[in-house]
Image 1 (tube, rainbow, N blue to C red):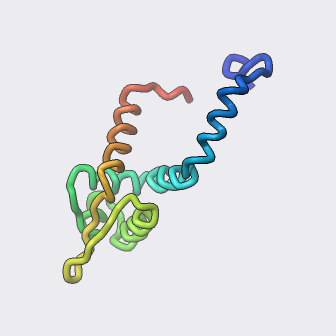
Image 2: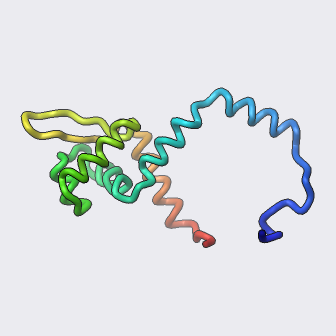
Image 3: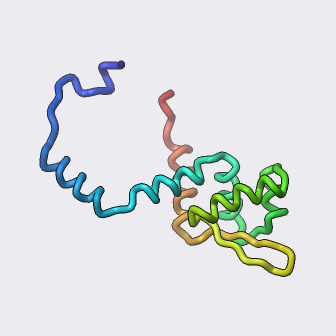
Length: 122
């Protein structure tokens, strides 16, 4: 282990730890993690980005944009829908998808802005 990136002695701020542990009990952190996990797949991130750029796209549009089959796009869209990232509506035989709300667009915008500003230490 690199000594620079860890404490060299063990001590902690009991007030901070207790306060934050209490706050963790009041939020649904598991759902937030599931949401981020859903978008963490590269194809699902591409779908999310695409829906940031156009308010509504049909499954066939999405499949062509990200370069996968309609079946593959549908699979990813089902996952995103299950996690509340996208919503859909049927129009005849077509299924149109859009972002569930503005928060998803904000998450994607912030993630892309962060990546353009920060050099990752790998």
